[in-house]
Image (cartoon, rainbow, N blue to C red; front, side, top):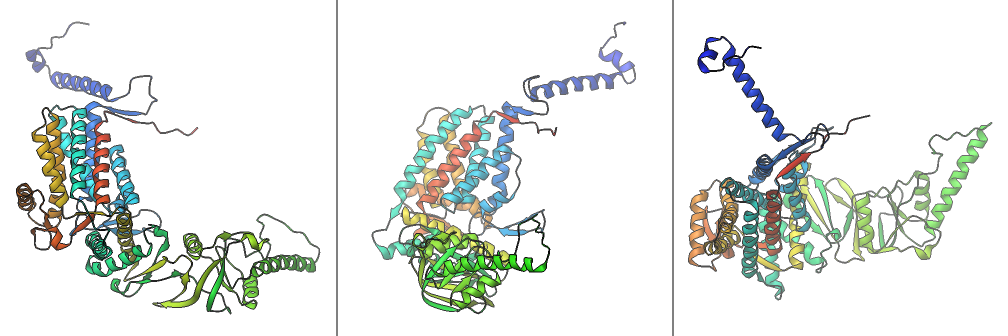
Length: 562
């Protein structure tokens, strides 16, 4: 066709031509961008999404920082709670400020954010506490790294700086730790202070002295084994949190069968997982054809004889208490009652496994050979009342360190959060009993580490020093966040702490949230477990390093139904 002039004057004289040219340019430009973002043709399956270079790195930074900001407001003694509402059947509601619980409950699509969720879970499994701190520190490290990447510093240079800074920070933390395990009285005081510090940011903060005593007594009963399965927690609505108590023995939330003894001394206990409800035909899909009703009665009689034989085998073990994982129907219950045996049915699975451990027995399923069955023992089994509920208490059990913490509270939501809080404290105390080093809390350790890392950055040549300075700023963000959540002037307090640590390297100054100023952590009794702090430092640095290495995100195409 004839050539068309595309100069500004000719275009402006033709109505609609300018808009058409602009639209064509935009379309071409958009096509290039789409090509840059899409996969190479013919290599990846259709529907696969790929992000490269800066776009991938930006997506990783944004997702991780968003997760850190989500849980940031729960950090510290004045942290706020989150309400998590399930959209499934029942619309379950959870009220919590535990970082791991929040992150486990929310659905996340961003792959980098999932890395932070994983480190939070690992922190919860390893030491029990610090789940929020580890995510906030990783988020701050990535926030600082994003600014360095925008300043054209290569991610591997940032990683090298972070690694050196983390190693230096760990050495400072190790040097600052102290250990009083040689003196049992002082060590118990340290454990109490650690428990109170852990519970300060939880729902139990109002009664933290009472619950710290409960937790320390329970953990010290373990005699250093760290086997938290021996500590059983029971939740009963009614009363107040302050009415919770520690019971020396194992309490099972079940009822004793009808017409059976309610109290047994010097008990010999058989713990079983066997069917005790086969006194009627229940083979699904089975058909039994008979020509008269007497034959049906014969079948039922045969079933009864079979059950009677099984019960007699159990009685022949010389026991006076039988605990079953499954149901016990009326007929076998009647046989046990005639034999003077206490029968407890439908003990929940976690409960029965812990019970077998505590009683020193084993869970049995067959009863032909009494010599092969290991029975459990305890001095006394009795029925007790908690509130309006009847429960069974086993006292003087074979595993002497076993105990039960009974939690009371106004609602199930409060009890659930109290259990999570107490579990965190128990895990931290068990970790401290194994590794008895203790450090000062309240932001003191972070400020001390940040000061040393900054000194290292000042004498390090090259761009690595910028990454080290960024690491120090990320460490100082933790005490700043604690101040912000308490409504304090974070800039003022962190500056005062920085000056105090610069003036005296061995200072114990941290944040006194009650007075709203810097205070001596040793005088205030704000201690934390060394294991928790070192795990936070290591996990957050490794997670930030992993996300920094990303330069390509490939999302697989969904599998199509055939």
